[in-house]
Length: 399
Image 1: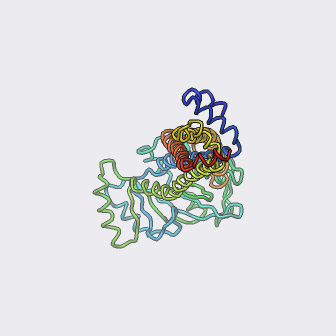
Image 2 (image 1 turned 180 degrees about the vertical axis):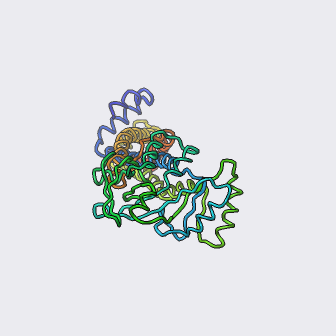
Image 3 (image 1 turned 120 degrees about the horizontal axis):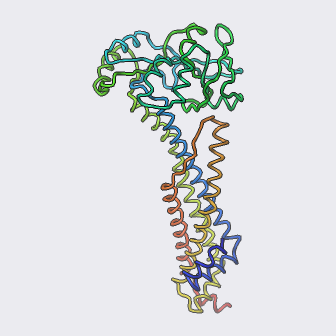
């Protein structure tokens, strides 16, 4: 790194650049500690930012694919993403009785046994979902998957977590326990399920009645006519349902915002971690430069005796901090990118089984790294204040 900075430092700062580089070569180990402090802090910031930005983008795409109904209704007692206790059938009948309602997707959540472990199974009215999905989401491949599910063949979609855990892939067979015995389904889709960190199986509702003997509903998705004003219809719906039933009713935008709010709250701690990382790099550089000032009081006194000004000494220390900052950011960028790929491609898939598309937030990253660099340069200013208090005559007379 010093070889890389040698020519521009000498050209821009002339003799001070030469003295600074010589000083840094003479204390390579001490400056290396400060360098790694900046590099590790930068790497942590970069890795977390790439992870969060990539996850946010992937989650947004998943939301647009799966939250396509106009209105969502579930029991108020259900605080999880999936409900397992049936709501009153009267609620479904009341919702269907409104002339504005064109379709109701009756969803049933169940816990099923798979290889001795509990997984979540979601039974949905695929016919209704497929009929109205193109209003908000267009994906020919996904539409073909739904078309297969709607047919007579026993097919199911699974989450990527199950694919990783049990080595399952598309067109394999999965056996689910039911009151009628083990039921085999061909896997026609493997996708991420951000709504759960355990396994998830997605099946058409007709198999719920045939093999599990159930026809009830735990939550519903409502599709209304295109000319319906939701801000007028939903108050009427609430006025009819809420006096008698304890329900939560959201429109499409509210549910999407709720999901993103949960995401933002979950990752709020990472911003504190990034702030701490910047402070760590600041302390590392200050400590290294301050130690050098204390150790080299005689050299600083001799520079003063030979005609060096306090401004030049301050310039030397800040230039050292700048070189450490740039070098640390370069190394941190390489290390942080590698860390983010490990977090996304290895740790995430093993722990959650989510599909995260790698994205780099260039503008945010550049802004943060500029802040790290300026913080590092500022770290060189504080030791220069200590150097100014050194009495040159005391040390020169000793020499």
